[in-house]
Image (cartoon, rainbow, N blue to C red; front, side):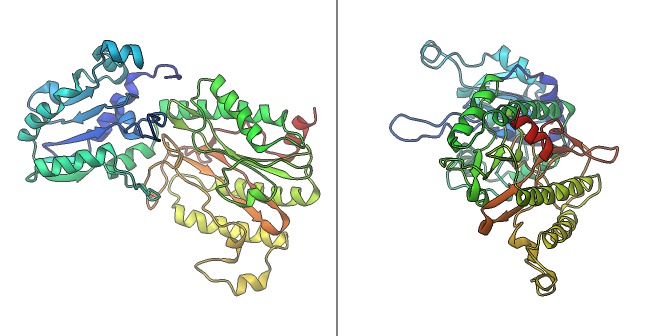
Length: 430
């Protein structure tokens, strides 16, 4: 992998947190992702399943982690199964992890080759009363492709119908949402790489540049800093394109007088950063652009003050809506009549700010977590209000990544990335 080796102590802690919440005499199985085909002999680049990575640090295809804290054989309380390397694999793909390397990465002492999995699992299931399956239960998941986990679950239910079945997802959503200090350090590193990309762009953007050229500059900077690239598909949206929330074509010329909305973030060691900035193609904001920009920035500053322990995201979003409503009135985009006649389920401000303000961040850009529970210290959230005015060809969103702390206000992992109008204009006009 491009990133520097991570310390196994993180993954040992993560496994301890998971097993502490397991039911007695049960085991849990976690599969790596498949390598997905494109066509002919082409495949997509491998992306490790975030759950097995979180629990083991293993970033290799065809890997399986088994956790069985009550196993009679002490050596079988944690087991990694790996694809065995061979001379042919070493020549064509490069060597896979050795058993010793897997231990050094994960802290799991018992490592078997993958061909032993069915035999060992059969032995363990004879002891166990229940099994934890790892289904994707993210609220925004829309999977149409059968995964390695799906195939394993079908096979296991058929082979072991008498066992109790439990879900790993609720445990993982709980423990993954509260980050260890090592994880926050990795997210900060990803944010620092993103900062370098933005600083590069502020000196690069000029009228006539194309959106894809901006994307290329970012990719260059990210890769030069040991990231494998973007944490998510980048949005480089100039002019009216910024009013399309998930615009990813990035194929238009950036014209003088327009703004560019940049929703981009580097990953590092599978951890995501998620940033949005808006910059003027010509190097300076117009008066109207400044008014809208400062309105969004004000909402963001007020919103992030509420990201403190004990806050409920549902109540937070309602209050952010009230702050945004006030700003939209000042901008003369809505008025008191609009507010008086609004649908409570779709308030007037939603015409110009139609998405949520915050989401969990971590190994996934939209990370797992329980949105109905109060915010806790150690959680990481984005804060990203926006105003989108198609009739004016202006879309502005501003976003930083924030760590919830015990001491009141959240810690901004992106506080050193320019966001004030004066900062941006100064750098662009040096």
